[in-house]
Length: 205
Image 1 (spheres, one colour):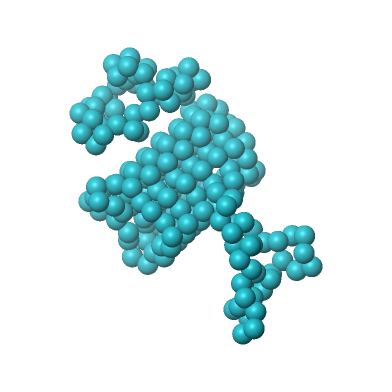
Image 2: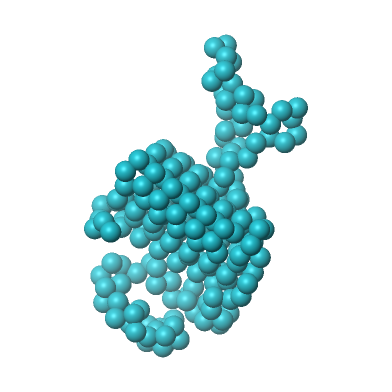
């Protein structure tokens, strides 16, 4: 594993990064494609992730092959092929459909803090995955996921709570993901050895 940096992302071989920003201690796995997105501090994606037009919170865990903000094709026109909007790739006297691309970029997916998206999961545009939520491997998320819930399947549906509602509320209030790097280090042993309720009791959540 790479030594991560407070200065910005560690980007592994073969990645394509466009119009994107990254917080401290972030990492992009090999052969990933990131476009029009922001990674909050400490978040990472494993290899072959494909993320477009998304806001990724802090401490997000994104497994290999995950796709977030998959692009759509027009369905109400006579054709759905991208010659409609990438027209300049086909004819010298035609231009790309700027309005289509602007609309696509505006349909942002949002991934909350301390989330985990399993291998080959997909999150569609305009979907919000709440803080602390878990998306199972292979799931296709077509609607919002409540904080601290676990979803699975196609389309994804709730399996169970990751934490009981009262504990989830306390974690969101505590917002440990906003702590400084030094504060996280100071609490590291508590993160490791205390159960969640004891951790909250000790740290005021």
